[in-house]
Length: 278
Image (tube, rainbow, N blue to C red; front, side, top):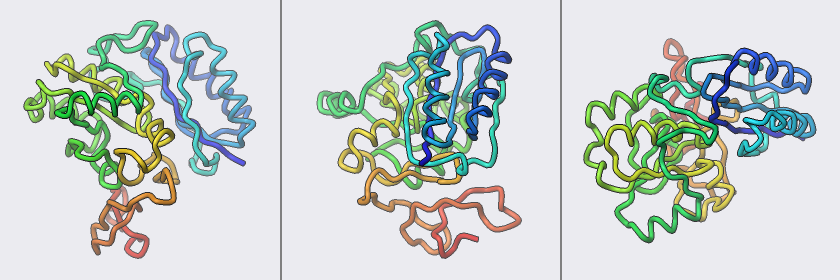
């Protein structure tokens, strides 16, 4: 039986290269595959393997004091859902292109949005009906799943968010409560801080992201569709009742299937039903 874990921690790291070497050795010793990014800002992890091996990895990682409070999300999967193990040091654990703008202390990102649990999101929406969801993911991810009424940008990379915000594309939301969300929460840690620095007056972030919301409410809440994931599974459904809100770009059939286009565009992803996928 296998599992995939998703988590991140924002914490000042004096020696990211040492963390990289330790994490690679730890994953190799447990037969895990996936992707780990380390920077001076912290760590971002998605790895999978046999369940006992994944538990050993999580326990060992949490023994390092800066990572002891890691909020780990578990889902079904295995090492086979990843082509290899990749552990890299980068300037940012999420590439928004503003490493110098981000301030990190022992408590995490300084000046980010207010963290809200899934239940607190519902409470906020009851209290402030003008609040709006803001999707912090790439546009392709939102095509197969998103929160009801969410603002979805045309972003194709995380760098695009800074460009769009600096261009004033969403200035009309600056005086409204904005709830940012993404897959596991890591992109919103940065996005909410970037938005606050640009004058958005009331910014929140869904703690634990869509993954945690799905654990709490499944398909009974405000989420619609499937959650896109960056491994061979391509998506996660929260129940047997998940709606197919995506539309195949070739035939228009409702689907949550995402696949690479046929050559010569085979490095581009699109929503394609199983019959139209190459």
